[in-house]
Image (cartoon, rainbow, N blue to C red):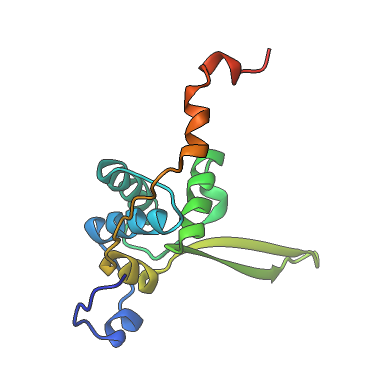
Length: 142
């Protein structure tokens, strides 16, 4: 499933940045590995959305995200391109305060961006084709 690309593991370990093309390929591949599909255009848009939050940093603070952005970040965490980290500190009044961060998982982004997915077609057996003949209105609850 992976192609040999000639890059060393030390590059993956030492590099803490990515680019739009690499990130969009990683997103598309990561979703494909979960049997989910996203067009190339959609994966570029998702990568741009992520890059806009991170800029030149490799982490962002969670409380700056809107709920729909956080949902997208959870999807990116599911495929491995983002990780979470938590920092705890004690406030002056003695209470504990937790700060949650989202971190680009650059080594996983590099790994996913270099993978090549080979799609296989599954032949549909005749028994399951019977459902194709049932009209759509029968599937909707009344």
